Length: 150
Image (cartoon, rainbow, N blue to C red; front, top):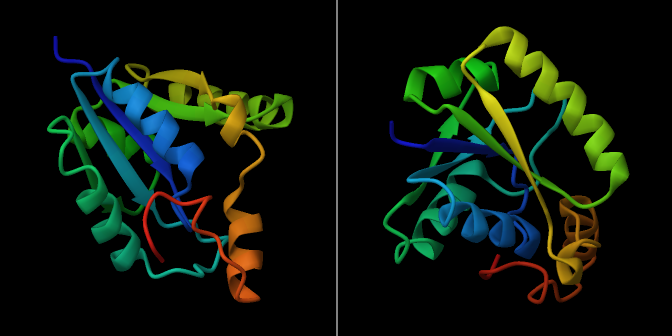
């Protein structure tokens, strides 16, 4: 059976931490789909279409990695695209508490789905999309925090 993972998130923006998780995940799974989800509780700062194009372009040399947009429950999307794994990155114990609850809910919705956690490499653990958006909004250089120009 092919190991297909969905790496879901809003990726607003896609950070070096996200890149770290995606590259490491691409070595574990046969196919890795970076899913830009629509979160009804969040208003996007960076356009989703722009981020999708930049992510796909950035991973063009990784044949088993692609990005897509989605709406709806992540577990339903995973089932619909044939993913049997969710890939999630963890920066700290706070992330674990939050992600563990979501993993349990996703397993309830789609029993064939397993969540795999990868800890972000230490050099990227402090990076968050929120901090990058704040810096960018005030015209600060964020190039060291993202894998492509914004």
